[in-house]
Length: 114
Length: 109
Image (cartoon, rainbow over all chains, first blue to last red; front, side, top):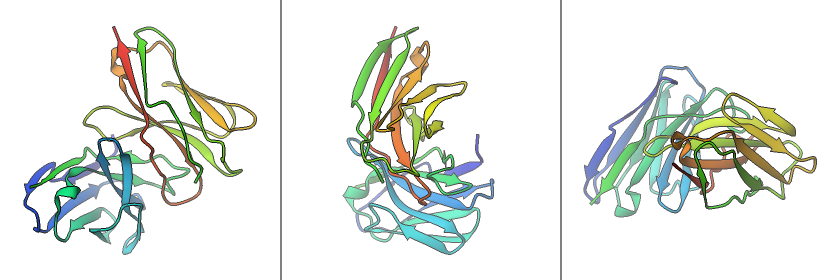
């Protein structure tokens, strides 16, 4: 399995609190991605990174920010969590552009916002 | 990116061959067809990718007709452990890919 971990694996928080999810990889892959998965919606891309300090928005980026200060870490922050952000969050990595290269996914983080 | 259409769900029985067809009428010249598999409570896993004709690996086969407007993922002799969601994607050199809702495959004993 690709060396990709997510922390925490489960989190329950309250509306209005800030939350940071961490994705860590040991593969030295250039590309990293954050997705959310909700029933009836499949996987939706939130943000992605194509290098240290290089990030871009996905299809559902509102309410989320990301940072990548090191190749191995990609952080997803919910500045003020809302109940609509209750979801399962997956991080993925890829050695090249995701269209041509396999994406490897982490185990996921289940976030509940009360 | 070209939009894909695939069945929402399918049922099959152990030992059968399962074929999941995906429609992608607006596929572009430099687009590839990629399939991912997702088991419950896990992230998706890459299965196979192809451009045209037929691709086969240890897990599945991918059949792509000459017009490339559709593709078929073939799983030989499925078992209960093949119960999963299967995503058909059209991908190109872009930095990101779009997952749809996938096909929920349920294998019955």
